[in-house]
Length: 358
Image (cartoon, rainbow, N blue to C red; front, side, top):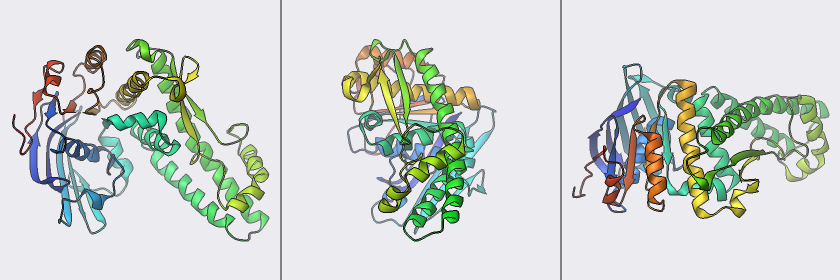
């Protein structure tokens, strides 16, 4: 798929702006603060239905405005066209696909596939577990939209169970909630493990030669249960029984997918601690390229790639290798303050930005 056009009104620094795009993509070149990232954030919004930077919708409003809109049109791989419309005002948003209101976010994930890559993605390695969970939950949802309601149900059960732990309860009542929690946890973990297996297979096969700095990378899943999880709900129930005193003291669930983490391993060592900045940077970019390849393989949809100033600290060799892997099979948008990026992405035309000289 590719993005044909987008129109913004009162979105971030754009009072009113519209663009038409090349099917191969475009270069977005300009100084810092001119709106490059804001445009990419609007494109990403079309794929996830919210800010890719986890901003609240009211934070996306142009200064002084009370309504923003995003309108876009996509050419699908089936040769059909998909229209996207979103309006936000006063804490409410209306999302439409092909003029039809959309209430379930999973519907959007089925249709539009966008991958955003930025310098802050380094936090996937050195940042908080929450940062990693958010990324992988989003990536899994793009591959398997049915994961969204499962995760939502699980997180709702965690909230309800935490409420239970804050008051007096009967043993049978707690066992009932524990059983629901265990079954829901197992379903969430099935998807996380399936995705992790696909990613690790890709790291060790077609993406193993992109860089000597990124050889022998794999991802481990770190769970908070003492001896790991199984698909046996009774074993999870046993963990919960052993933790009951502590959970009552802390008044919250102390094991589960909402606490678990992912660990990057390079040649048998923790990348976070022992990897160089270059190795971490390349590992994250490769992870995003794997994400794109998996989306195409599993869903049959070619995702749109958004590269937000990721090449500034990357040497020429790795920049060219990434370009070769993309090979214009995906529509790609490259945002950068440096005009010499056009010497690498020679087939991409520069996109005009308001107030920025060409």
